[in-house]
Length: 244
Ligand code: NAD
Image (spheres, protein in one colour):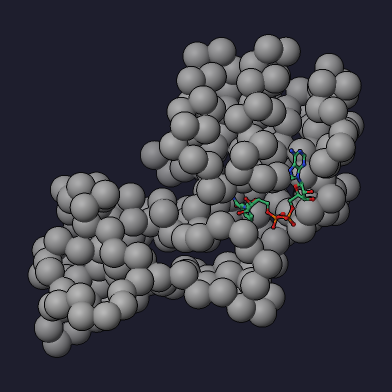
């Protein structure tokens, strides 16, 4: 039995996790933490914390897990580089799954994106478009950021100099070393991501559309069960799904 504690439990993902966990054998939710609650008060009752809260909250929650020797699955996105470094520093002490997207479909998209970039080569221009609901707080999405990281690595490009966040004004002709990234917001869209490979005469588009948060919730619960009892380290969903 894996005993989990949810941080961000009252949020959209938190509620999806509560609903999905109730249908999952071998796992029980023993704590639900949101703003105003103290994780320290319930932490001893759990094996794994699942965090879908807010970018500035995660690092402190993870440090508390390290102090008490608890595993943590992190789904929150939008961490600053400094907070990301604080989280990654804990990998020698506790097992951590850090994933910008827990859906099996998106992790397949990650794999296909790398393959397509390798096969299609430098004649294809690379652009990523994401769309999410109007209430999403960070942009671009963590998943889109992972996609451009994969593209930059596959092409041997420095992401910082290659990235173009939207375009406006007289920006000049597109250069070969660019990776475009565009965030759309509106309505109740759970999460759409498209990777475009555009060359003269043809275009390849890889698209994933999530229509329910259950896909992320079930993936995160699967990650929690996989992580329980594992050695300290920094893992991602590719590890959980055996895609590496
Ligand atoms: P949300 O705003 O609906 O919920 C966040 C919840 O966290 C709220 O209830 C808020 O009160 C709570 N919270 C804020 N600070 C907290 C703190 N210090 N301690 C405890 N709780 C705190 O947001 P959401 O749509 O559920 O998304 C949450 C996060 O998960 C976002 O960063 C989002 O981008 C990310 N997300 C990741 C995936 C994935 O697969 N990795 C999927 C969906 C969303």
